[in-house]
Length: 498
Image (cartoon, rainbow, N blue to C red; front, side, top):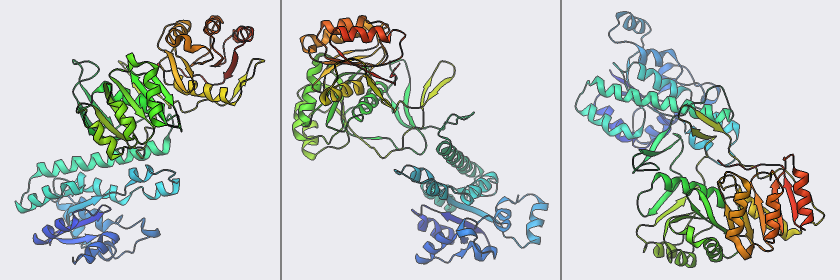
């Protein structure tokens, strides 16, 4: 009288598998909710508490954790002493275990999930069942996912005793429990413990890496889905995904309609405007030469008018939180343009991780704009000045260091990125802005080590500067700003981006 044990949270396809089990003479034991579901579907099922003659405890937290269950699974069929042990206790052998787990990863991906809810969705009995059955795979078939049911049905129909198939299922079960535990560990820690485990799942094969001689793929944590949906266009590359991530992170700094155009992991044009189409046109106007072949990110539902303007130039990617049907149809005329919908409900990575040739660097994400600011000059900014300075600061946070942004009317006019000294970044940004720099605003990602950058800003007519404090020459910088009639605001947070 062969027995199978079924305990599934996800009941997809379980009826077909149960029909096959019954056709092959298996008696079904099931946990309470699974048993209820199967009985409603017309199956004859023995509930675990009936089978063990032991009622569930503490609200169902303890149901399968019983010697009669685990002895029936773990008994080695070729060990005389194991068989004698279970026969003395009148314990039947359990030859098939079908089990999938509480959706812990899905639960913690919900916004504002409570610790109590997360803990209640940590599966204990299910993990134990999978591990026990997988450990004894020479004799027991473990079925850890609904996607395996068709293969199991075929296995049963062939009356197979294929140990390699049972080994395959055992490996999958151990992989599932390993990932499950690591997901719980990552959720509970959220800080730098002695050991950090990463178990990544490949989601996309990429043509190559940064260059054709480099292999590449896109991976996520096991509980993460791909965070975007591709509506059209060529396959994505390694560089595409880097730039797309930079562009998206930048526009998410803003609540009003904002467009960022990224090239080689740096913004070349960023603008905000109550009119989304104007926001795009202003971003493009910032540096139309560099924008060619760039990546566009918008923090608003893409509309028909903005889509029309986008199609007038060549871009690689458009990434948006949503898109109207009209806009989708317009962009479809650009067959190679990749159009992506970014999914905001996917849980973020807990850390930022970068690999060295040997070893890894791990840090928290730079999610703090500033804790406080202080006006250091006698000329004080008004509300509009502060808004404009904050716009420039939000952009400079996403520019490679040394980073300088010149902007006005919530539109970048000049961006200096990645220079080995700060004054060269200032020169690049101001020269790009040209005459438009007069009355504009300048943001720096770190302090000015010398007053020369302020002197240069004054020559171009910059109205106000925002920068982190912390230089031993801060007082010299403040004096230079005061002398030239420039508003100087100092913040307490640096924004290096290497």
